[in-house]
Length: 182
Ligand SMILES: [Zn+2]
Image (cartoon, rainbow, N blue to C red; front, top):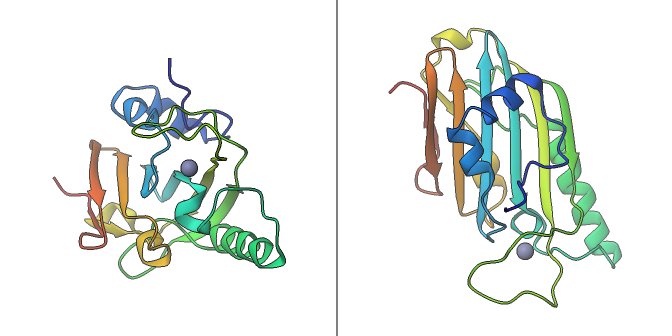
């Protein structure tokens, strides 16, 4: 059985419950694929709970332990951005962070598809966030700053749960809107 990318990530209860409900759980078991990431969120009243996972290379440009001062600076910068930026927002940017917990990654044990990576290091970055977003019940679309901030993230699988059900979309540089209305 494949190890879930969410293993070891402290995720809010509502999201954990949603992840166990089927559709999201399948996607959360995706392997470590460079260029791809997953973003999952649950909307409940004005609260949004988020779990983001990506191979570290998509954000840092490398996956090994930082060796040089330049690499350390990059890790610190990305961690600071993830700590202070809501990964989901309304079009007029009303969401504020309640908590953000970036995990900059320990070495992954995932299966790698397509080529042999046995002698390379791979890491995943996980971020757990809780947001406060007023007037969310009127929102028909949300956005994420991730694709613009990190061009190495070429494809983002987004899955969400709202009081009216669950859905998903794949975002790319060309398609960045999250349309909540069916
Ligand atoms: Zn990798």
